[in-house]
Image (cartoon, rainbow, N blue to C red; front, side, top):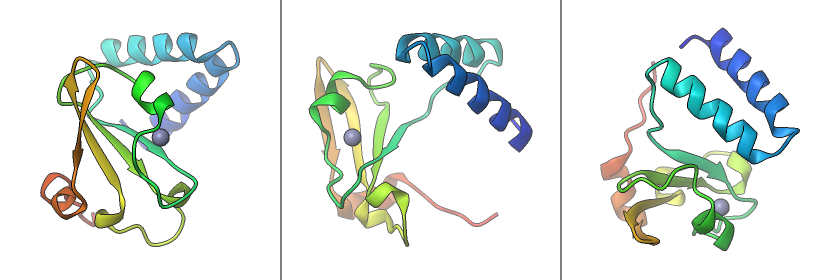
Amino acid sequence: MTGKHIIELSQKLWRATITGPRPALNLLFSILTEKNYCIIADVHTHPTNWVGLSEVDIEHPIEYRIGLPMIVIPNYGKGDIQLNSIGVHLYKGKGIWDNISFKDVNKLIICEDK
Ligand SMILES: [Zn+2]
């Protein structure tokens, strides 16, 4: 997927959110299926340093799939974000999430310059 495709997809999804989150998610999943892609993580930001899971996060993940990580970036992603400051939570099923400790996040996520 090129940058142009990502922008086009973002624009389609943005237009779909006008009618509500469910149509946007349906469009996202139809595009993913059409292109044979899958979601590898559910990533969002929080306004502060707190990167735990809110009730909304727990009740509305992008997908309930065992092992799918939900990654929470602090401070709206502003500034120099270190791996040991982000929240990583793995879905275990039946509404249970495993919170990965800050010291173990770098065992799951590798950042590389390309
Ligand atoms: Zn959240």
